[in-house]
Image 1 (spheres, rainbow, N blue to C red):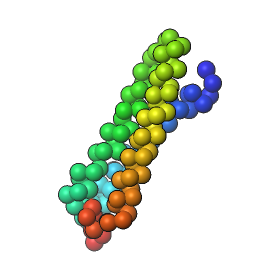
Image 2: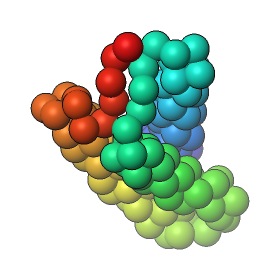
Image 3: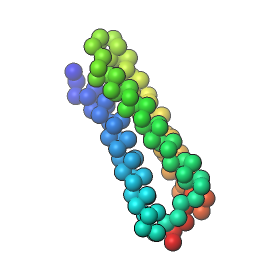
Image 4: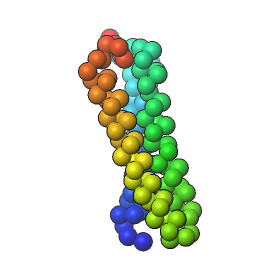
Length: 107
């Protein structure tokens, strides 16, 4: 198995963990009173987690698959899902950066 196949299957869970750590840091800032999160931020925050959960699940199926054709198909699916997830996160970051007043208030 080439190393880039293994790296691609590990990228999705790592991106999911990185996003969840970011959400945890935002939660810590909310609890400490540094920022106030608006309703739109609560609505947008689970979208990237869901987007990264899909390729993570596909990577799990890739590790469990034994047929070469199935593994190849799942690897392509992981790549496409990671690209879509990065686009979703980039869109959310762009929206938060362009109009931050709708999403949070720095106290």
